[in-house]
Image (cartoon, rainbow, N blue to C red; front, top):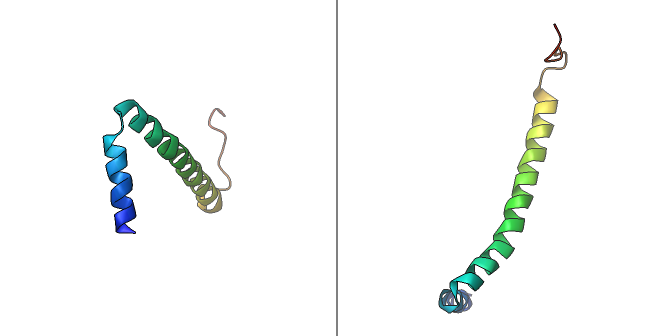
Length: 61
């Protein structure tokens, strides 16, 4: 497994920067977006479960 990873790392280090950037963004961007969506859902669920139930509207006077 480590030999395979070393080969991939060496290949990635030897390709041109523009291609490196494209490959990294193609992998990291969907992962980061998915993680952000998951965190957003977890925070929404947690705040709905433990938040105040009878809160007046913000613009009510």
